[in-house]
Amino acid sequence: MVNIELYTKDYCPFCKRALALFDGKGVKYTNIEIQEQPDKRPEMIERAGGRTTVPQIFINDTHIGGCDDLLALESQNKLDALLA
Image (cartoon, rainbow, N blue to C red; front, side, top):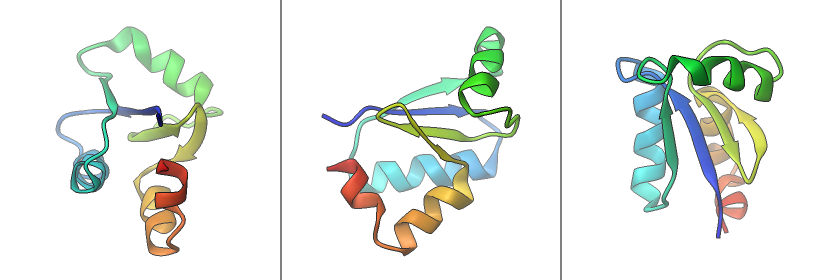
């Protein structure tokens, strides 16, 4: 089973778009809202190689990047293979 983790903020439109994409595909994910869990922010930055923006997306512990990176994978028809 695929393990998807997203670090998000609830007011972020890019986060909402990434979550909507996963919801549309019917896949389960773990959403870590860093404004509610500020102690997770340093963890996100470390895992994301220093990136500080949200969302930061991980599939099976591999850093995918942010929303634009996720959408690029989808438009290149590469996302479904990662989710299989």
